[in-house]
Length: 202
Ligand SMILES: C[S@@+](CC[C@H](N)C(=O)[O-])C[C@H]1O[C@@H](n2cnc3c(N)ncnc32)[C@H](O)[C@@H]1O
Image (cartoon, rainbow, N blue to C red; front, side):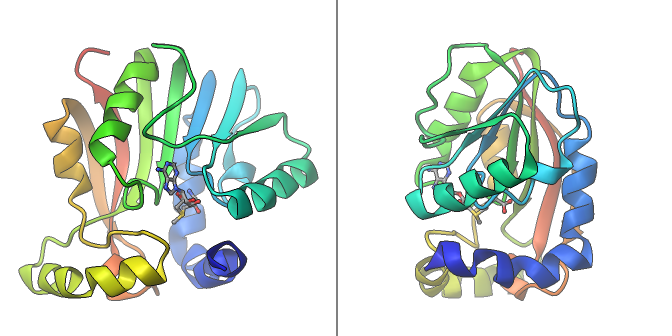
């Protein structure tokens, strides 16, 4: 059901700025690229040409079907991979760019996902992200806490109150990050962080 309603529920937010953010973020993707939780493939059209490989990781079968269809229609040489961010089927230090857009809120074990990202990134490799996060405003953060359980059921596992930036820092990532708002989306998922992260050792 989530896969069926996913694109229509995001459409307004995409038009109100998210599409532009995806395009800007992905302009610097390079080399061997892994996208985590690629969903229905909303990022696909924004990748630059000339990538060495584009590997689209998605654990959910219904999402994967839509993703595969979008890949076929796009004519891009991308490969859909059944896996989760917590267990990436890639060798150590073998990936130049990892992309995570609206995914670290949903993974069950973000710590393990961050360890996997650090493991597979090559020296100099980068994680490009757009994530909605826990609000700076204590008033909104309280609402995110109150609504987190019903929201999780409604939005297929999404934790609207996850402090993703703090988690990344705690796991040894260095970040360049800007804050923004996901316009025209529900307030509890509106606070966004956009940026690049590198494991300190990379
Ligand atoms: C909110 S959607 C985002 C989809 C896409 N990245 C986008 O920007 O539109 C979250 C996606 O993460 C996927 N997902 C959930 N748990 C995951 C996990 N443990 N590892 C990787 N992806 C996961 C879901 O199946 C879903 O496709």
